[in-house]
Every structure is written in structure tokens, then in C-alpha cells.
Length: 316
Ligand SMILES: C[S@@+](CC[C@H](N)C(=O)[O-])C[C@H]1O[C@@H](n2cnc3c(N)ncnc32)[C@H](O)[C@@H]1O
Image (tube, rainbow, N blue to C red):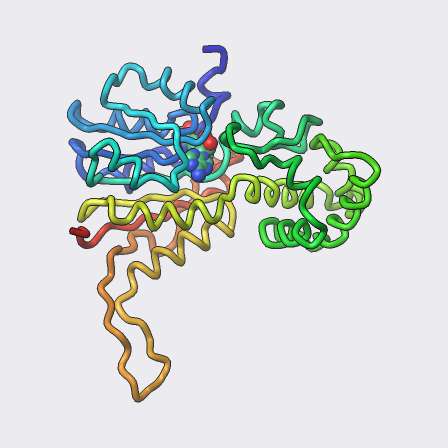
């Protein structure tokens, strides 16, 4: 295969993932975000010959690359082209009722980011696209050319937390009336006109993050996937999530907290709190970050936050 292992994607927190995820070396594990298959390979190497892994990715390029990388494991690695929001139904189709652990390593892979034809990056001037799954209809060109100004501004604010969201949306709508916005460079030049050079890179990162989240419906998919994953986890099984920005991390943290809650406060001293039946035990009180050594060799690891929780009881 033409793409080299390291250039496709270097997995972050590799040892930490193994330590938090694997509770039984004969178990069945899900890698919900296969990417280049780096984590998947490490998991399979750690398991006994009876242990297996089901890997999901929305991106056929990732599946093709990972299939090649994991070929030595034969039938112990089953790869699925599907959105991770469909984990439960997809496992049910394969007659897999329960698994011992599920890993989510969120966001895009280095390959997706660096490959010019994918249009994710503002560092080169390429056709705007940003779809993880290129069979999906919505791409970034549609968002920037067809959303109305208010919706665009909301996307930039909600998913990018960009303070100049309104001005950027306004100029974008003005420019596209002159000619359609086609490339990452077109968007970058609009952002530059609004924010100037001093904070340009930070604003570009926020605007491109916002577009990517919108195109791939990332936050809703994560919320759904976490809910879907829970009943599939065996008692004692683990869910491990690595997130790369605060919007994702907040969803994971709130979900874990909600599922681990013992009481629902009534908010009234005279009314007792409602006792709940928690489904998760939180294992990482604070998120785990990458070591200095790792961040020095992989800049992507800098923003990584790993959270882990354990299933308390099995849904019958
Ligand atoms: C950070 S990479 C994973 C890298 C992987 N852990 C490795 O070791 O190479 C994230 C991957 O998740 C995939 N992905 C993101 N959101 C997804 C979703 N909703 N459903 C399925 N795959 C998704 C992306 O296509 C990408 O390949």
C-alpha cells in the first residue's frame, strides 16, 4: 500500500488505551473509530488468540488501510463500514450481543487531515469537502454556499466558539453572491479579511473545526453513539473515549456523570432526592492526558483527553 503507517495516523495514548480498555484478554472489543488501525492493532496484539475486535469507520479509505494492516489477524478482526452511531444495530446484525470494551478515538485522522483531496485543512488550498464518508450528500461547499447567514453564524459560534462568527458569516454571504465558494483558500481569505493576520491561525482552526463538525454531524453522532454503546457493554466492560476539543469532552463527561449518578436532587429540602440505578462507574475522575514525551513527538496528542468508565450491570 502506498501510504506509510506513520503518515496515515499515529495513535495517541496507545498504552493508556490498552490499560483502561482491556479487562479480559479473551474478550470481544469494539474500535468505533478504526482510522489507520493503530489502536486496533495494539488491542489485537494484547489479546489471546480467542479475543477479537470489531472495527468501525465511516471512511472507506481508513477501512482499506486498516484491513491491510490487520490482515495478519484474519477473522479476529472484523471491519465494518458504518457510522458509529449505528453500533448497536450493526453488532446485532452480526449476532454479537455483548462486548468487553468499546474505544472511541474521536475526530479526523492525520491522513484525512493531510490528504489534499479531502479538503479538511486550511494549510493548503483545496476543494472544500470535509466529509468523513464521501457517500454522504452534505459537504462543506454546500454548508458555506447554501446555509443562510444566521445558520452559518450559529455553526461558527456553536461549534467553533469563534467570536467573529457574525462578521465572518456576513462577509461569506456577500462574497458568495459574487462567486461560489469552492476552496479552503476561499474560506481562509474571508476569515483573514475579517480577523486580520495576528490571530488568523486560531480563527481558521476554529472556523474549520466548526465546518467539519457540522458536515459530519459530529456532536449528535457522539451523543447517540454513547447511548447506543451502553447496552452493548457487558457488566464490567469498559468504555474509553479520547476527545480533542472541549465540545466533545463535555458530552463524554456529562454522559458518564449522568449514567453514574446515584441520586437525582429534588431541589427541595422537604422532598427526598430520587434514588437512581447507575449503569456506569467512572474510572477517570479527571481526564488522562498525554505525557510530555508523547506530545513532543506527536503534536496531535497535546489536546487529547481520555476518559474511561465501567459498566455496572448488564441490561437484560
Ligand atoms: C482519530 S481517527 C482514529 C485513529 C485510530 N485510533 C488509529 O489508531 O489510527 C478517527 C477516525 O474515526 C472516524 N470517524 C469519525 N467519526 C465517525 C463516526 N461517526 N462513525 C464512524 N467513524 C467515524 C474517522 O473517519 C477517522 O478515521
